[in-house]
Image 1: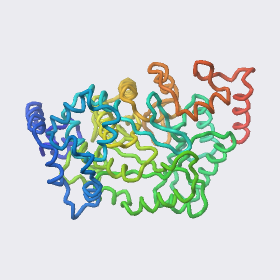
Image 2: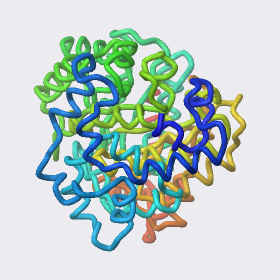
Image 3: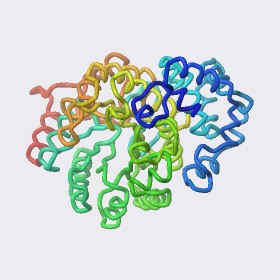
Image 4: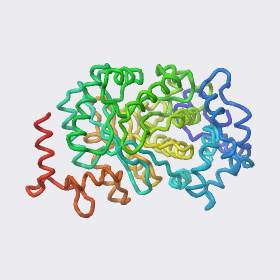
Length: 447
């Protein structure tokens, strides 16, 4: 209960009866939490070791040697150290295997938003498949061309739209409306044909269930990244129809395809505060702490991409823009500190007390914090999943304001296609721009 009472206010914890009943109690809980030694989290599992495979993963994979430099600290002491000059990028990278999710969740509860940003910015998690994600000064994006009936022409049009704005270096990823093996194969074949036709240095993904992904690979489908939603307890993952062994089987199958060109990071995970609580599989933990345990699952499989769908689960768990913004910063901080390559779907549902101004704030703060990638959809409105995210134009805003660039290999491709000018800005399809006109014309004909 101490961790729950120390959390920033959120509707999910109140729904579960775990939240502090007043600001005074919240402050008192944070003061008490600051004095808890980090070693307590290695002595007292929050979910029993014997009954939960995620707990076993956390304890069995804990790197005692990496933990040594901070093993004498309390939670409050860790916060102060993380904000010091001593905690630089190289030091934090070495520390990551020594931190458990519970330690990281605890220290995040003592931090202001600016603390979460400044520490996360120092963390570097670089991953590779066909391009390089997570380099300093870079911001990648997932191009999400969803369609309510999986119409290939509609998906192709949205994909072209995104490419013309320079989106898609993290992944071109479709949430299928029909989650069948044959439909996934058809969509993957279309995306892979597009990628190969124009020699695009990116990866593609249809976000089907991991067991479908295994069947797709067995059938010879063009599977780049294996996707799965994950959570922070064995029971919550069982609700998704998965366990650690299934994830291992899928990863081994994908590795055997040898589709990566510069690296073998090929798993793609999504998480979100409220997932375990909605499945009644949170075991009395507040939603941010149980969420952070999901990052231990992700870390086990060396993923290329992980993102929190921060406002997607709804106002029952994150009520308004303020709670969504705080949760997004927490998720990014906790994952990066654990060595997980975190991105974010900066999003909200239409029944939440949030709007696009809140998303402007969160995407700006996350870019300042060094987020690995964000998700973009046409017009910021996902017509299949019926929620609000970011648009391709939003990515251009972030590049302009922060000077962040794309994955280097994707940037070279845009230059080769004459899609950017000398300053790296996206070009229009002028009569002189023959390469860009050809891309538009051929893709329209193919669709």
